[in-house]
Length: 196
Image 1 (cartoon, one colour):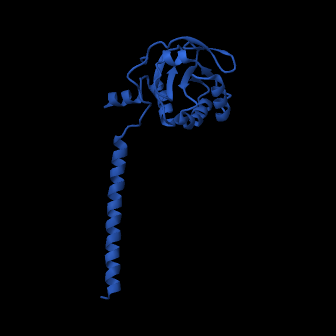
Image 2 (image 1 turned 135 degrees about the horizontal axis):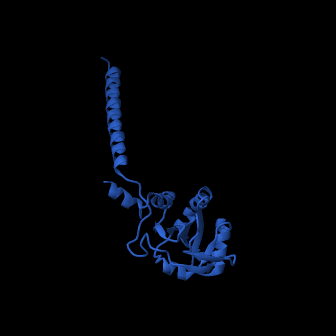
Image 3 (image 1 turned 60 degrees about the vertical axis):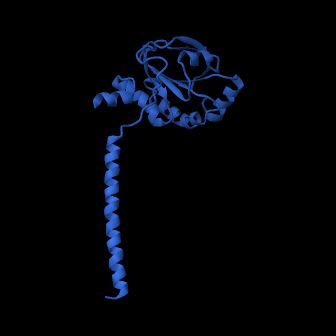
């Protein structure tokens, strides 16, 4: 055999070996994917418990309209999302919030909440294109929901009862709140741990 033929045989053997290794890695990745449950919104240990009546607070949005947070809203749930103009994660989450608000508008009202200087909040609303979403500025609201990190979301049902809450850093975290309410659990983690 010539050296060229020998090198060709060795190269083909290596290609077949690498293909086998790649198949094994892909199979293992599939096994890992099945074992890992989807991550929902991160539940914090302190704060209101899911299933409790939400605190009822009267606040004004940036347009001056009175909003009663925590009141019963027949046939409608309320997503209360705490954000800040200085929070980079909040800014990346806002397109998902706007999209969810449009897709879930048949049953969901979205309210954004923050605290701080009104002019800074108004500039944030303009810069992010949030004029269509009610935006309240109220330190008392953050204290009532014991918000310590952002972005933080609380989902209230039509009776003003807290159905899901937690840190939401992605669209998946946000949608996990809706799924938790649909399943009647505090979080997806609770659902998956009970299913095992």
